[in-house]
Length: 128
Image (cartoon, rainbow, N blue to C red):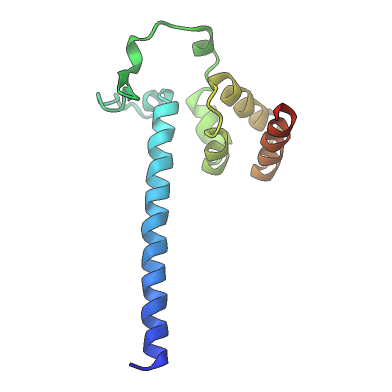
């Protein structure tokens, strides 16, 4: 086997691995998106399946309403004014109120993804 053939085979295997890992990365974020933003189902006219309603083995719709349930960005604003890169960065926030805050600020301030990351990092540094 020549060096040229080894390089081709090696390059092909790396590309195959990168595509495979990228797809898993994308699938994870899309699944998480639908778990954190169930209002998107209504926007598309889709009713969630029972597995979509599960979060950590618990059914979401049985929990009592909280004040944070009122702070929900409309699906139309979420999908039309934020890129999926914005949403991936915002999904790193565990607190629903923090996610709502960053969604609102991104839309109101027309933040780039870079600006959003900078804001998230500065808040993390202040709390550390």
